[in-house]
Length: 167
Ligand code: ZN
Image 1 (cartoon, rainbow, N blue to C red):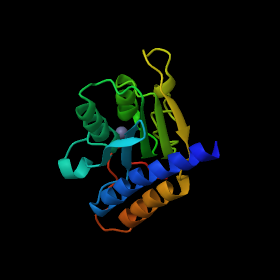
Image 2: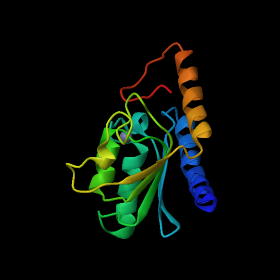
Image 3: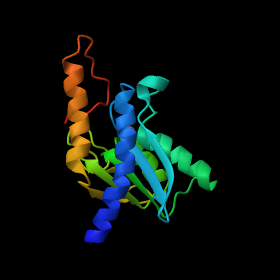
Image 4: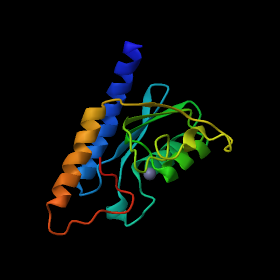
C-alpha cells in the first residue's frame, strides 16, 4: 500500500507542476495528468482565463489529449490525477470517458462535483462508476490554491471567477 501511495504521489507531482504553470499564467492553479500503463499520456493546466472558455479546466483538456493519444473516447485503464477535486462538469466528463480511477489532492467541500458536494463519480443513475482516492499531496495542492486566492484578494482588481474554490 505504501508503494502504491508513493506512486500516486509521484504522479501527482506531474499534476502539481501543471498547477504551478496555471498559477504563473494567472489562472486558478489546478493541474491534471493522465497515466496509462504507467506512462504519462496527457498533462494540462486550467486555462479558463487564457482561452476565455469556461470549459478549459485542466481535466477537460487532459481528457481531450488522452483521447487523441489513444484514438478513442473510451479511456479504459487510465488514471487521472488532479490537484483539486473535479467540478460537476469535469466529473461528468470523467464518467463519460469511462476513466476507472481519479486521484486528487485537495477536496472542495463547497463545489466539489466528484464526491464532496455532488457525487457524480458514484451516481447510480449514470452508466459508469469511477473510483477515487483523495488527499494525495493534499497540503501542497491546497497551499497553491490558498496562495493564489490570498494574492488575488489583496489585489485591487480582485474578482473571484465563477467556479473558483476558496480553500
Ligand atoms: Zn472542472
